[in-house]
Image (cartoon, rainbow, N blue to C red; front, side):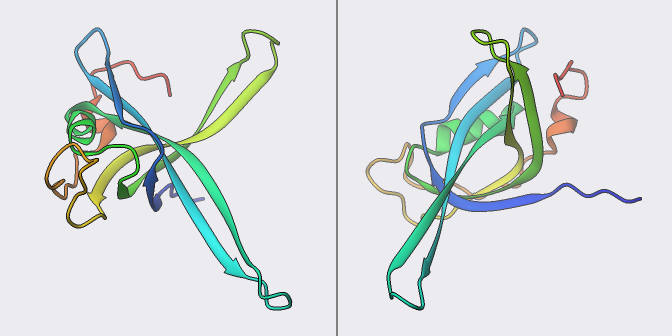
Length: 141
């Protein structure tokens, strides 16, 4: 049976991107995005909204560029692969999990940047495939 794992999101960054590095020097950039769905209740006329928060991971030189070009609050288009991260809670020992997106491409959606952004304009980019960046790395997924 065929499989396909692709996700696209447009939203606002929930925190400034942070880079860390593997012992080999490969960058791993962590960030978060929020997307909000708004709708109007036909019966009451009340406007409702629901926000979804998703963690992002951007590998290699793409992650370094992402951290340089983007800041908390900026609108961004991302695409990538959805992954389930699982671990045991250190305090309780319970199984924990959350979804995250391994980003393979991103674009600035803000047009001209605001004074809160890190650069005057964040270029559009189609980064290299995350697996290609880490082909010689041991990746925990």
